[in-house]
Image (tube, rainbow, N blue to C red):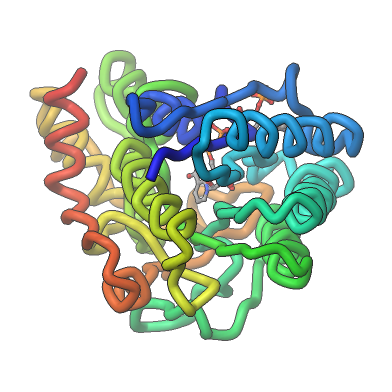
Length: 295
Ligand SMILES: NC(=O)c1ccc[n+]([C@@H]2O[C@H](COP(=O)([O-])OP(=O)(O)OC[C@H]3O[C@@H](n4cnc5c(N)ncnc54)[C@H](OP(=O)(O)O)[C@@H]3O)[C@@H](O)[C@H]2O)c1
């Protein structure tokens, strides 16, 4: 079945990788925030309406994959109102527009909705407990989408890096060339995820949803497989850069305070993704290899 996919947040790192997957079978419309601001109701209604119309004319199935978000985790601590507008109010309006037009919605969320005091990977049904303003606004966005009456799915992911935008991999590459050694926290564990892999997974889900075969479970977890600390991840990046990984020294979160609290452990279980018969995500180490090979 041909798909027409609207991707709000099309100029973000995930949005760009979704747009890159356009093919004869998948039309991707990926407006940046200047063209589609999810906090502006009129723009949201017009964009979802135009999507439905475009798909009808093309004989394809419309789907929205929402990649728009306020992602500045530390800045959100002092700017929660704006973060809420983008991460909760925007998705609520988007979901209402999707419900009205009978367009399915896939909404992207985060591991930071969890408190991080678990000792085994989080399942979608585990209790939320965001520790930051960003996490609170994203949790509110999930509720808004799932309570909207739209045919909707929330996909939580984590620790994204991609070719565009700023992210941890790029920061490490910059610091490698400017510092002899650096300290990176070793007591926060998560699942680094390449946006290209996530984009492919989201499109697979979108095809299923469009075919009327969307998973019964409305919240899914999707990250590259495995888990590592930021320090371990930084060392793997240094190795890829041809640099000595020992130049990355472990430190604790307490030694490196940030405005927003981060979960100490936010690994997301792959079980829901597998149980939905979606292609399992490869290990984070393989994804990092592929990212550097594609550079
Ligand atoms: N980055 C991570 O490590 C991470 C981890 C877990 C989950 N996630 C989630 O994954 C999704 C994609 O994240 P990402 O890393 O691709 O983020 P990103 O690179 O920061 O991209 C977010 C995009 O949202 C756009 N945006 C901001 N405000 C908007 C508004 N009012 N209306 C429309 N668009 C707006 C931004 O556009 P402008 O640049 O023009 O403002 C940007 O293009 C988000 O839902 C995020 O919460 C991210």
